[in-house]
Image (tube, rainbow, N blue to C red; front, side, top):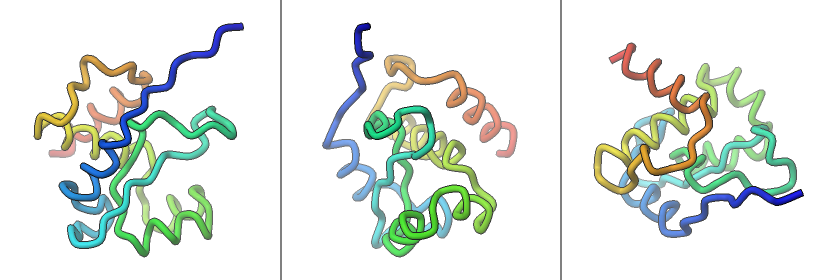
Length: 117
């Protein structure tokens, strides 16, 4: 069985850290990129485009309480935050979403974001 190539771009996480506000608080001073968990990648880190912007203290919290408890506590799914971060990166010219091997759920989340605005 051939392994699927996973999109990696170490500079993307740094770009998130420097350019994107936290998806929960809107803070821009201490943002960490966080890879989505529970999306079928098992012990392999999810592709780098599946990162979301979280304030440093929230990034620590999601690792402590787990993503399901975090989503319940803050009323946001990782999927929605990944989509929000990707849309921001796309709008600022950092990534072209049309050129990334995005899962179908990402496009569904993007559509939800557009309908909310």
